[in-house]
Length: 373
DNA sequence: CGGATTGATATG
DNA sequence: CATATCAATCCG
Image (cartoon, rainbow, N blue to C red; front, side, top):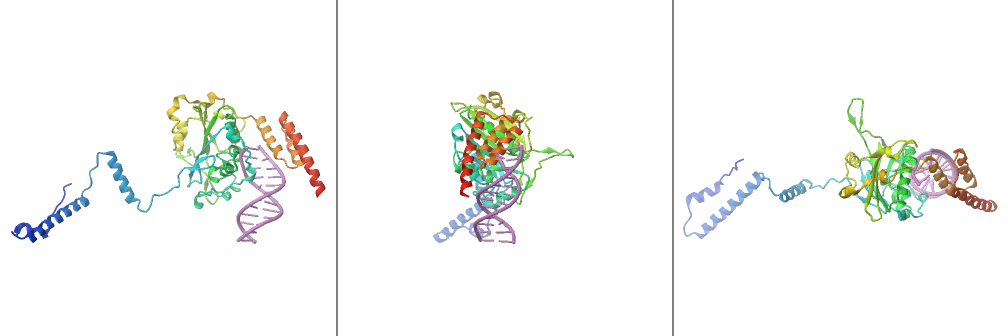
């Protein structure tokens, strides 16, 4: 494009008529007018000429940033997607879906020790999230979906603060109850058991919305939303596990994607083993960017370990133990104890001992309250 | 360990 | 009065 430059008419007289010799006043006026003219031309150039693309990348960046500042005069749209830090977990929260995008944690045998109790803690909206972008307990109530921890309560017994943090709804997704209490629970127990074999275990968990092919042959991402706040129900859940050796080097990694539905004892964890790259692609997130650097040394978790979840009998014995521990009446204690026979389970020495101890404890207690009332 | 539901009580 | 909170009970 050619620049259009017109000579201002007010200068014509001066230039055509020549300078008035001896008139410094006039010379001053002329110089003044020329300066003014140059200024005007430059201004026209600034207005009319589209700047040529600078070859320098840095210059380009600078220009875009400067233009961006003008464009975003009224602020940068804010989706609140800053990484959020808590006592014992870190997460990215999705304000649109009202669930986390991912939740990261680190556990070790030492970190798992503790006595923080989930009975003294309640699910609550995350106080750090703007209310209109937050899920509420009411959204889950009678929805048919349970509130599933991503960073499990059982990984946060170290302190009551960590326990309470894990009950923030930013750490929760709508999860099938049977899945939550069953397969997913066993997966979480498996992760905790890994700390007996490996010094440190790093875990990232989160929800996934996978596309399905509909009758028309097209693909759709479809998910239910619950409650007034339209909390998104994930179609699947993922968990990435990294275990370290004693030198604190990454030893093995496993990525799993599990459907958000009941999963029975007939399924193995390895049935849900997936390629990390594929999971990341589907999620749109590079989950462990710094693991890539040492990828060559990181083995498949299920080859280093067997990726075997706790079995049915072991599992049922496990939570019967928990129930015996929490029994507060003799009647309750007996009810739980009778479950063993119903399920044809044989109590081990620990369970028998626990039962005996609890029985004498509760007998004593009920004698006392019986007398006082 | 992972949860929901219900009913009594407290509260504005 | 309706809603919030807690304790008790229950299930896999």
